[in-house]
Amino acid sequence: MKRAGGVAVAALCAAAFFAPRVADAGVLRLAAEILLAIGMAQMWNLLAGYTGLMSLGHQLFVALGAYALFEATQRLGIAPWWGLPLAGLAGAAAAALLAPALFRLRDAYFAIGLWVFAEIGYLLVSKSTELGGSAGRGLDMSAIDDIESFQSVAFWVAAAIGIGTPLAVRALMRSRLGLALLTVRDNELAARSIGVDVWRVRFVAFVVSGFGCGLAGAAYYMGGMFITPDSAFDINWVVMMMFATLIGGIGTIAGPIVGVLVWYALRELLTTAFGLQGGWYLIAMGGVAIAASLYAPRGLWGRLVRAGR
Image 1 (tube, rainbow, N blue to C red):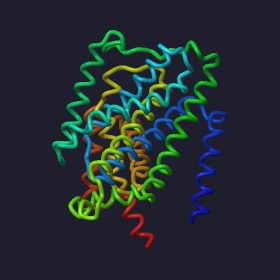
Image 2 (cartoon, rainbow, N blue to C red):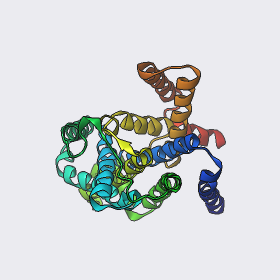
Image 3 (cartoon, rainbow, N blue to C red):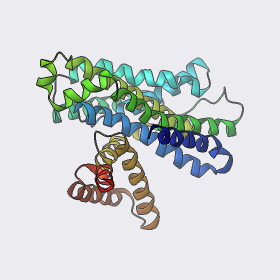
């Protein structure tokens, strides 16, 4: 089983390496978006599926990571990919600063509290002229000589995040910290009784989740080379993460991957074949989510596993 998994990962890495040479720009951009969505969904699932903390504000980390990257390239004069670690650290720092306040809240209050902080971030950025205001800003490309090679690197970064994030979460869940996360999710009182530091465990998961979303958000807008507050702080980011995780199977590694593939397949089908846009598109997605919750309450991946058994 491990050998088959290693072969599959190696095949994905090889396909990602050669993809810029055989695929056109539109296909690469869509593939990069899907890969980054997988990374974001894994980070949302790490918090909700393994610690029991539902979030409606993860777009905050996506936006902060992206704006940190844009600021780093302009102020430091570096190539965008060198600013990616700073973007991840921006998301992690935001999570660490907000944790003491948010961890006093539970269930829906936690989710709404994080959403409120995301809205505050949106207002601050949209009013800041230094960050481009509501009109947005472009990426500083002065340190880039070859735009074509830049697009290839942007795709490879997305592939590294999309492939590496599930592997990192899998490794985390096999560690002592991962076992502690599952214990806290299943029974917080029992976890405390056996000596698990519930606050610390949730703090680590929250910071890692913020780091991953900040990194993925920066990679997404690096590829697009332009950012606006409306798009960066768009709640549809967290809608996608939530939909993918719940539809695919919350609390599993494969579930968010399956859910993201379903999300983008439906998006392309509904918008291209049926021409549904705006509210109609979201209504159709909501109908699919309701049907999946009724007929596959453990997610599509859980149903596939049961069928395989």
